[in-house]
Image (cartoon, rainbow, N blue to C red; front, top):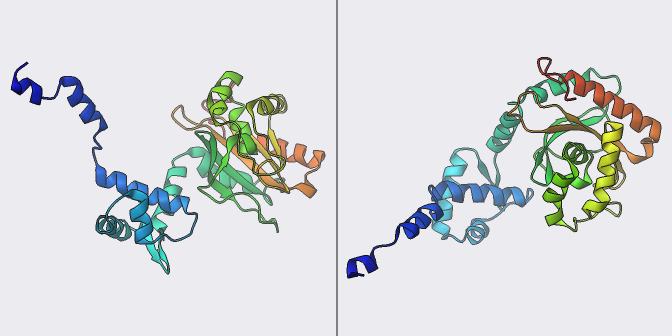
Length: 274
């Protein structure tokens, strides 16, 4: 081996370096700032907090924040920075890409059973149900989850409706690595073995029911939506009911109404899945 050979990195090493190198470090760091602010759940973060979270110098973090602030992605608050209005606009634009979300509000408002209820659309994102759209209804109760928030799919009605579209082996592969599930209420399940019988019930009934597994005092009822186009994500639509008003008859009524709306949101050129 010559001295030149010893100094020249191997082809494998060069390939590894290229693979590991971030193609756009500033973009990646900006995304990490946005993620940190989202994880803070509305609590402002100071420049020092973000610099520590990113492992960057304060000056570099300040430059990133200035660019994000100028673009409306973050904004200054009394005690630091928080997400800006532009993030809400982008989140809404993402959801509005899908025909079913655009038609959802009209279809729910026209439902004699659902128009007064809080009804939401969620998609499966990893092991979570991610909430994309919300019909507020006229319920005097504060129910449901904020747009852009997540709940463990195994513990929410919309998540159960989405997971029921998978076979049991797919459910195990997805969720067993996360066992035991974090319990959100005393009624939360913590394992796939507890989940699978629930999914069998969803498939038999045609809609999912969550009685206090994600929020105490709330019963969720949900159905899966057929994708409008092959590239669309799997979506589910669910209603949140006060537990004291969610007897078996009311749950069945809401479940049937959700199925009716789901049929109205099915692409007429595709039709329901057999």
